[in-house]
Every structure is written in structure tokens, then in C-alpha cells.
Length: 375
Ligand SMILES: Nc1ncnc2c1ncn2[C@@H]1O[C@H](COP(=O)(O)OP(=O)(O)O)[C@@H](O)[C@H]1O
Ligand SMILES: [Mg+2]
Image (cartoon, rainbow, N blue to C red; front, side, top):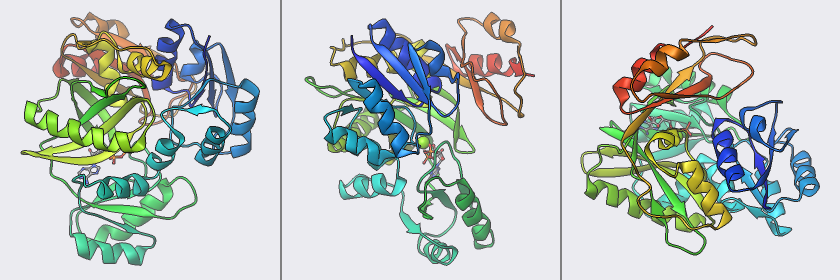
């Protein structure tokens, strides 16, 4: 039986654990708080601070896993490199995890590999940022180099608001590097995630691209397939292959692109299943979690796992609570073909993602999600 150590126990981890358990794995799930979603379905759990290298290494040595699977970005990644040197297997690879947790590292790599991106510059102070804004022009997207889910990100339309954006980025940044990326705003027609599956002894394959809509830098709903033409899909696949080949390792990668006319602009990449890919729980006979499980365990993946079009919509909390109930679940499930996944997070806070609604199209999941209230 393969032993898997999951670092991070959110909703994506929970679905991955279910896929791994179905294939007979033993899983230990770690998070900074107890009873996190993935921990509710594992054999064992640990509450540790994953930014503390010593605690992570202690956990690895204690559990002695066949596979170490990071589920979040906020991990002391030097430890993963050390673990790999000791002979442990990190998914997809310690290098991939290390590069992608820093927006500047992965963006520099994409640039070196010749992928088209938005114009970008870095800044390490407010003054730097002012200079950079003159180079790129407005509107400008500012993000801390270490952050996720839109934290510290803002769109700046003119120089009056630069200081506010700098302060906001500094307040939302993780880690000890005071550095932001300033990007040209791409007025895209739509954006996609291309789930890319790197396999050990088989070619790289792709899911049909997923369209998604974001607010505050956080995904609200997604649909699959996206409206991308075959030509655009092929362009995105070629770009995804270049960057995932460079990163190496095995597993599912969520490669994000902006589509503007015929242009395909690389944005960023997750070396793991992607939140917008929750839709594959509805659309594919092998979800992105099943695909990740098979790829990391080295099992074959059959073709034609795409079954039917569909959509997903998040259910967000609107305030901070540790005692709450879900209202309207039965109303949501009255909608045709609608299914709901409640993550089981023990507390809420404003905009925290608590559940996802799956269904046949965006209108239906939007309506169903709208009838769920967390009170
Ligand atoms: N340069 C840009 N132009 C237009 N929109 C952007 C740009 N950068 C980010 N966004 C919007 O913000 C979202 C989140 O940004 P992203 O870089 O993916 O950060 P995160 O790591 O938090 O997901 C994107 O999906 C997109 O909707
Ligand atoms: Mg993103």
C-alpha cells in the first residue's frame, strides 16, 4: 500500500484523498488547524505549521511516505528539496513546487522559455513601483510575488492609487521578500485553465480547457469546455507542454492563460489540481483528482474521459462564524442535475469558500449557488 503525505488539507486535497483512497493508498493529511476538509477523510492527520521547516521534516521522517504531495503554496519549500535529496519523492517535483510558489521565478522561467506573457516588471519599494508604472503604463495589475487566491492583488488605474496598491500588496504578501510584480492589464475576452497531465511512462495529455470567471482574484464559476477554438486550444497545449516539461515530475498542472482574439497569453501555473477544475467532478469520468492520483501513482490513464459539458459555482461565506448552518441546500439540489460538495470547514470568514455547486451549465449553477446561504 502506498503511503501519501498530503501537505495542506483543503477542499482540493479532500477530493484528492478520496481518489487516492479508492486506489488503496494510506494517506496522512497535514494542516495548520485540526479537522480541515481533507483530514476528515484520511487515515491519519497532523496539525503542523508548514512554514516551519523543522516541523515539516519531522513529519516526513516520522511518516516515511512514498509520495509527498503539496496541496498549498505556503510550505517551507527548501525542506522539500532536502527531502528529495534524501530520496523521498515530491509531487510533481521539489523544483516545480519551489519555482511556482514565487510568481517572479515562474514568470522569469516562462519568459526565458519564450512564452508570451503580459508585460511585467518587479518592484521592491514604492519608489521602484512608481518607476515601473511609467514603463508599463496604466491600468496596472499589482501582486505580491508570494501570495495566492488574489491576496494583496489590485488593479491600479492611475498614479494616484499606486501607494494604496503598494500598501495592500505588502499587507497581503507571504514570506519575507518585500517584492511585487507589476503587470500590464490584459483586457482578455475570457481566461482558461488548461489541466495538463504529465505521466511517468506515457505522453503528456490534456483536459478540455476550462473557462472561468474571477472576482477579487478568486474564482467564482467555471465551465468546461471553454469557448476556445481548436486553434487556440492547440496553442495553449503547446505552451503548457513547454513549461511543464521544463518543470518536470508527474501529476496534474493547472496552466492559466488569458485569451484575447487569437492571442494566447500565459499567466501562471499550479503544480497540482486547480480550483477551477472542480468542474471536472461533473464533466469527466476521471476528475482532475482521479487523474492526479493515477499520474502520481504511475497508473495508466484511458482516453476520452471527458463525458459531458458542465459548470461549477462557489458558495462563499459572508462573515466570520464558528457556529453556522447551510440553508437552502435542498432548494439548490432541486435544480436539474445539480450536485453540491460541502467542504466541511469548521469556521467561516468573509469570502471563504465553503462549498461548490456542480451542474450542467453556468446559469443553473449560479441559480443553485444563489439559493444556498450560510447563516
Ligand atoms: N495581467 C492581468 N491582466 C488582467 N487580469 C489579470 C492579470 N493578472 C491577474 N488577473 C486576474 O486576476 C486573477 C488572479 O490572478 P493570478 O495571477 O492567477 O493570481 P492567483 O495566484 O491569486 O490565482 C486572474 O485569474 C485574472 O482574472
Ligand atoms: Mg490564478
